[in-house]
Length: 51
Image (cartoon, rainbow, N blue to C red; front, side, top):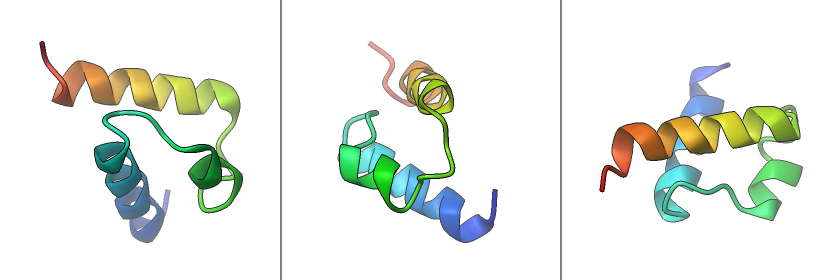
């Protein structure tokens, strides 16, 4: 994943409290599959949103 896309991904996850918006997944991050999106969201929450 290019650095620009990775930065966008992390920014979107921060803004959405660990969830990617519909807009982000259909526009900027449209190359990701639904399964990849869920895996990324789950891993982000596991690492950054500790209870």
